[in-house]
Length: 63
Image: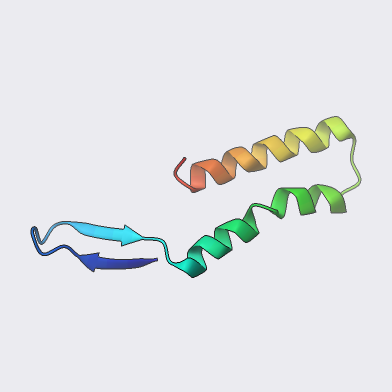
């Protein structure tokens, strides 16, 4: 993430995601699928976990 001051108002701060940040987010999106693949559990429980993890990712991503 990079931040820089906007010169129109010293209180404004503009933040943008870098290419590395975008790549990291894309990599993190596969975590729930990889986790479920490694854990031996009933399909219903795995689907529930998958949904919760994506909900968490959405909230962390500001969606």
